[in-house]
Length: 451
Image 1: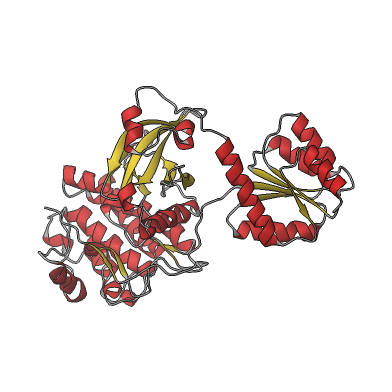
Image 2 (image 1 turned 135 degrees about the horizontal axis):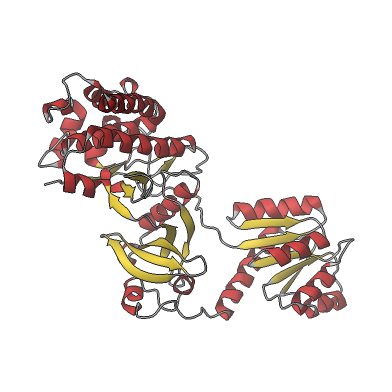
């Protein structure tokens, strides 16, 4: 029986963690480039998605062709004044909130701007702190004033109830079809995007697990995957909070099975199959590493094999919930001496308190390869203490001990032994290096089959 030990020792949330949540889509229209840049930098830092226009005509064109949640609009522009643009926008049916910026202080001017359809009015020079507060207030007012449309689909009330989704904009944007996965922490739905007629997967936290650590880890996952654009990594389409403060991630729907399910169903995998799967995982993982993201929880459950007509066992990396951003992160979700992940797949240095790096993920890949080849784990124990002792001190057994088609001391033995070396310096130093080695093995296997 496959028993996994999930561990999180030490830790605690450090202050200053930056979320990847996009607060709102904001268009800033101002022909003063210095003011434009200041507003853009400040609002982008607050995690808004900011577009800019440096003239009235440019702003009018962007309003016609884009979708925005709020506009910050300068009054004094040479080609088209802010009031003229605002009047045209409202006459055309535009309803989104608009905050007018101006150096005019007279009551008559304020009356003119508000009468043209501005929702708010801020006099220059202004404080970015005040502008930020007014933006948030207008967004809240807009959200409260707009009731969400009814949920999509019929006969799916029971599915919606599983995520407390009735009456939310999420249920109005996607048709929820069924629950396709659930655990102690979260639940995953199969849903359909109506306009694109495209299936998606929607992952949500359970209300009982919406603690600060879980929510921040959930946001960390969305932020990590959204930075990666690779065919061997699941794609994230959207992230946000429902009206009831339930975090969700909308991601690519993968029709297939986990690598763990395949191993449980088939037992030890053919050598070429195991090699081909891990080559793909290495490609996706290297892309993550190139973006400064260490997965930290690689295991067969987090590798999904997609059904495709052009190729069997197309591998996709999923579940970056424990990912650590090694570059550009302002803070960490856990303390540096924390140990987070699934114990059977943790590199020895992680147990000693060393920070995770690319070589820690390589160790996990070695464990996965061993399990694909033998349908068992390299270290098995009845307690966490015993398992930790083996990970730290016991050399890994060669997979050739468990199957006759692997010669002792042959390539697969060498790869597993090197990937799972106790000392990180003795391992493959990157997923790319491991992939190249596996690529040579795969080519050799293909040549042998042709002979």
